Length: 217
Image 1 (tube, rainbow, N blue to C red):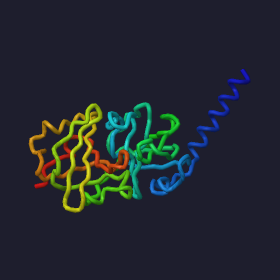
Image 2 (image 1 turned 45 degrees about the horizontal axis):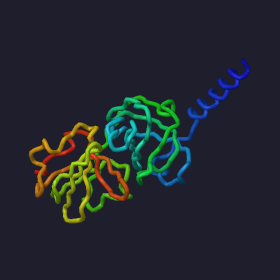
Image 3 (image 1 turned 120 degrees about the vertical axis):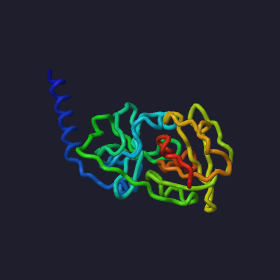
Image 4 (image 1 turned 60 degrees about the horizontal axis):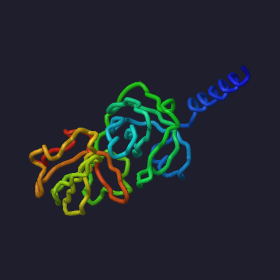
């Protein structure tokens, strides 16, 4: 009985700590050392589980007015576009170069009232970099290579607007098959919206659904 009471007391303290945690900006959270526990709030830019074939988790993208970050969760919190969320977690690397926020459990992912859409930031293809990681972005460029089948993870599409080539990585778990999109061929000019991320030093834009990819004109 004493052990049960002690456990309940520890749990109560943990819940109280989460409830009273100071909320900081995502930009500040990104600047802190790996292993730091932070609490941030923002709007969902990537629905949970959308990138599971490439991130190997059920996480989601989160953005506030200062920046964005990928929240890595092993279980799916069932979050869709624009939901307002507060997350407490540990800042760290995903093992492939992407900065992520890892909550201890889904109890540390709290849905808030309301919803808020995030508009993508227009970028030159050569500007997709460490500085833009975590943001919802939009690029326009010419397909500079044939589409690469990288299943079961996804597909590699490279575009360049003259400022430098960047990769549009289409995660298989989004359900998008670029080989069925008639205007996606080498030399075509396209516009893509997606999450600004990286994998092993390759900076990339990850679309979330078919509507994120369209002809440039």
